[in-house]
Image 1: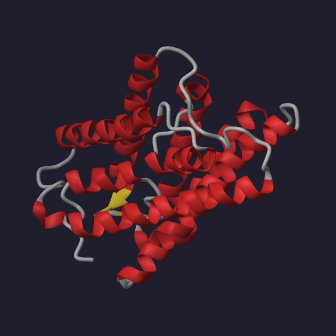
Image 2: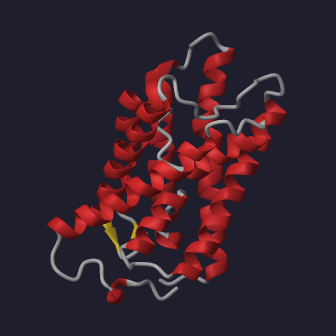
Length: 229
């Protein structure tokens, strides 16, 4: 079923809201509880909320919830630029609303789960590129056109997010998602390193598209694949 664009945009906004609220909320609660959630719990939260939202909304919008993923689908010629711009706007809005809610719930928390490099800037930048490459490469493999749907997609993508957060989180924050970083940055007014989490995921997504073309059948990322929506 092809849903109208208004419903697709609502799905992207709601899904991104849930992702940011649950994922960065786990970081905040972990700080307030003295580490009760744990690093593993934070990584699991991100992976599980992504998986849940794919199952809930994948058939409506494709469950991107990530401007880098949307840009990757455009680069793969599976989605039009016009629709992609609307998707990104909805994703950023959902992320900002989620972080705004967390600001009201935890007004004394300084960073609200904002992503910051723990070491050298170039190290975190490179790590975000590679982690997003992993994520986008998996997404391209389990999606149909510009839509992620089905049991395989939810498990594969949610598992990849969790895996990346487990080993990359302590260094770069394992954002892989400009919206996930944008929301907390706006709510916490912390923009020092936001450029890393806007630029690096986009580069990683574009590299993943190139890699997909190397291994997939001819014509998998051609104009014929552009979604009609």
